[in-house]
Length: 399
Image 1 (cartoon, rainbow, N blue to C red):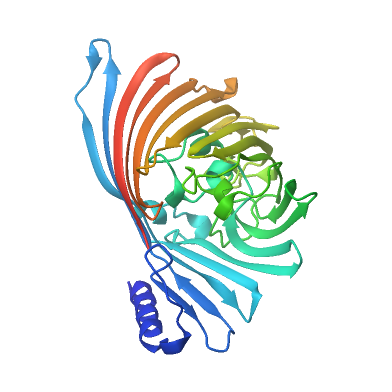
Image 2: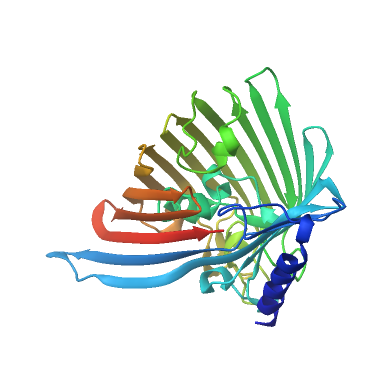
């Protein structure tokens, strides 16, 4: 609580003392948008939160059981960004406040709340070149890199839930190539620790290597629209992004590469295996229509964790393949209708039944993604049988 009070005090102090140094701002552009008079630094402070309601019905032989209801604060976050010393040296800090944001305490982060989401410095050291250092999202599947504040459905897909590579600590090198006026490629490389965010005990397994290659054959999206869902800017000409990600986590110690649970042996050591994850995805937008398609594949060298004596520990790497496709159309009233299909085929050793999920949603964008109300209905089939129906609704407020 002391930390939160200090953050609020700093924000108030900036607001009171900014005078001529503060830039004019408006809703959705940050609660505070301050630049020093001598141009030596800037800070944008943008808090946000999401309220959610869930109702679900499980199937049985005679139909669906009575609904179970949940209300919660899904996300509540404080975001700081800007430049320091030079406009070529940018930074981003994002802190989580909700219980979902803070969960995940374990011995490898000193059993502390998982408070830090992003803490990264981004240095533009040459034209079209950037070097990132710190903790942030890896250049993985496009759905994961899109902010949770910029989704066109209540939450991301099951493909993302089970196969994404999330955040990690390390270095990233990013480059953009313009081959012609409209044909652009982007290359992203990352070297990271491999255990996910907020690990303080050092590198428990091997290192993680990630490479992503993107092709934009029709030029850049308006306002970086390839990394937010829904065609809110109504692209005047077709825009397409094709992406491929390869991730190699050597001697991984978790069941989902950098995510999941630690695979602990009976002697207290950690089981290690090489895990490879690949993604192929695309984002397309034109005149209010948007489409995102993803394919994910994970495979590990030795997926079943065993002790020194050969006995199984019970931990198993979640290998398999997944497919996700969603599309939506934004009407001139800023109401959008969206449909999504997700399938997961687990590897045999996981002993998990395959999943298929249908989602249909509606969103009303009041101030773009910064103020919106959403609702969707989800039909889930496990092993080919009816399993559950879920109704979800929510509100997003992002200063």
